[in-house]
Image 1: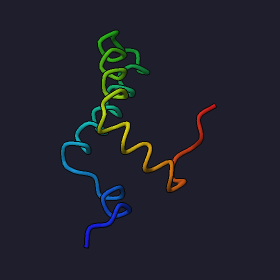
Image 2: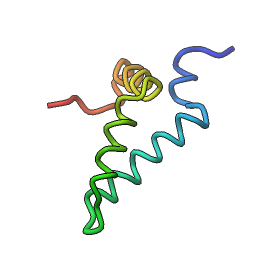
Image 3: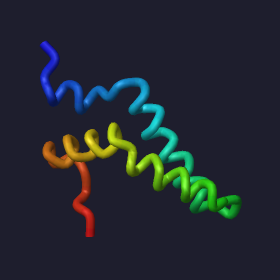
Image 4: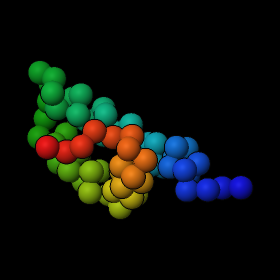
Length: 68
C-alpha cells in the first residue's frame, strides 16, 4: 500500500536530488565563495512544482517551520 504519508516521507530520487541541490546552493550562497548563480538556481528550485508539492505535503504533516 502506497499512501500519501509514505510518498511524502520517502521522496523520489529526482526530488531528493532537487532538495540536495537546494541545500548545496544555499550553503554556497552563504559562504565567502557565494555567486549570483547560486541565488538564481535556488529561486528556480524553490519554484519547481515537485518541490512545491512536497513542501505543501510536509506542511500539512506539520513537519516544517512556519514562514514568517
